[in-house]
Length: 633
Image (cartoon, rainbow, N blue to C red; front, side):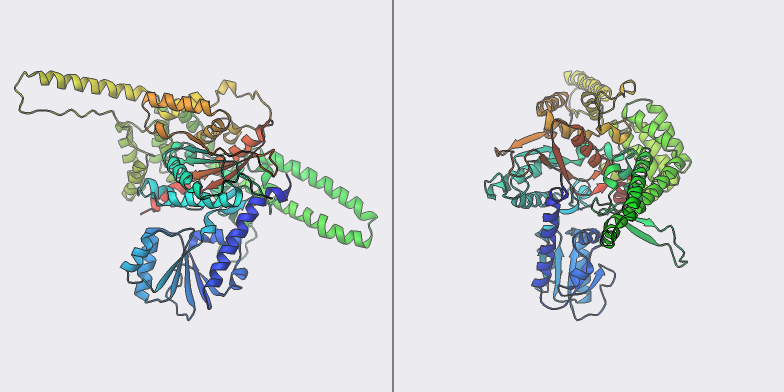
């Protein structure tokens, strides 16, 4: 696939976002000062830069809250996420500072409650609300379209607010206006089902066309609710890109790393590294690899570069002046950039290896393997308890294992839960009580719930009344059901066996050549989310049967596990119909490992040509997720 074809969707989305921003700036007369929320800087950098923004009547750019009270004669434009708490805080500041003629730009859409909040704060008529709807899906790479909203998961599951679901549905409807209607809609989970129903109602307004002339069409959209798979985010990432995200925090395809040649004593300096395949010619070949194999691949790249260098020397011997100019502008620059990128990735691999070696990474992987295979439960609890008692410097490391153990077993017994909670609070301080409470509310670390059957008692009944016998019988039935529930397989254990999520240690030899999704976690685990997506594309009947079995066993939420809708539109496209294009929307976020696992799935299917595109609301690492939970109000 050529680069022009590969980047076609991303380029159209980027151009749409640029036009939307510039048209809005030009529609507001006069010179403007632009205040940008910190969450939106990566999106702005992906579409434009400060020089281009200033050409459209913007005098100064500020970080929101950094200089809100400074004096200026220019109009003030505030670019922010439509978060209720954030919006109300800004409205109160505008009222206290008596700022007039302000423009509040919500990215990507405003909530109707904002108009009421402006009226409540006495700002109606003094502030104007705008939307930047084209920033709902900003391309990070040719196959990743960011719907960056780190507050969505916590807003839904912690605050029980579903305002963002309609925003996701509206974004997908706008997406279809550019690239044609979806022929198939597959949803996993309750929230995904709600978005799918809103999407189905909104599609009636679209034209009944199955192709867009001269453009590429997305045939299938997969909506995946993060609550269906809470195991994968808490597994230690082992692919190269996942570890880069874990240690250096990839944001908007950029990574901030400290400069190695920092001689300035004024403070630590950093440089931003782009990991986009447009800027880095190496990352696409190594991002899905196990980090121990990246060294070998870099060696192979170096060997190829040496061969090219020798060929370059041969060309130089008999070259004319015009040929030399061409060689300098093409081969020399490309060779220098390749050498620089290889050196950088080699340094990053070394840094990752040293950190993993220092953190007893091998022992932790063994504990995670035991949790996934449901083995050595007491030893795992003992290891976590020892880690806590030794006051592990990174307080999120034991929490990662606690959340993984709890979600894999549908909670912990009260005895173990109280022991680990008490030890954690004693080791890291009682100010962590709100964090543990939020984890319990999010079903990440909680007590195993028993099957309680409330039976009403009648205090007016005479002694020896047959109601006493019925009461005793009811209590016995409740006790038996409780014991049965406790010994029954958990949801993950059931899915692990039926979908072969954890390859047997004695059967790790590959039966097929080529990449496999299990390679992302060193053949230890196949992400549940990715396996469900694979089965929905290859064998949806199997998933329907599996869902029926879950319903019979009484697993909560089984009725919303899987749903498939077809619009009746042909899946053929005018443009390169040999590829089946699939858009995967992760509602609540995903990890780099899941994205790379689906990329490997597409490469492993030689008889089916799949092209996955990803639209996550945000990208997780277990540390960043726990930090966001702790910081949430």
